[in-house]
Length: 138
Image (cartoon, rainbow, N blue to C red; front, side, top):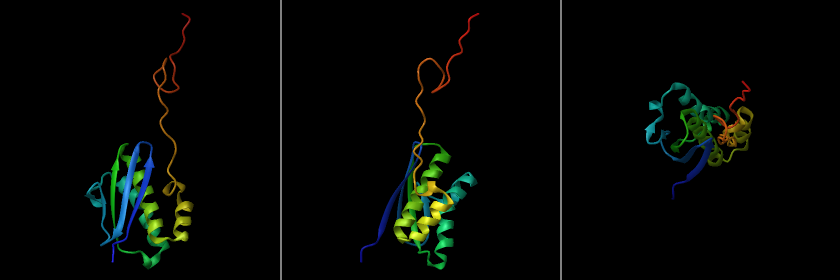
């Protein structure tokens, strides 16, 4: 019997996370590192949100799955947001549960829907996208 594999993608700003979910022992790895090794602690909590919600909604029906995530680009918080989106999308696809999908949307819409906001490019005549040099008459 072929092994069931689900692939999911999550994005936040310039960070892109690709999650692969398959049957296993319940191991979560991010860029080939165990989740326990991830620092700072806030990032680890952010990444675990979809797994905690899924375990509450599915009660004891949470399957033993391995989650392998590859993430690139962005800063540490953007990466965490991209990872949690990829994991949540993968869990919804893996379980096929509409109640899980609705629970994710109720908790935080960004768990399933990537944030479209991007950095606005810098323009001429100033230091940033909107800031301009002050005009002085004296």
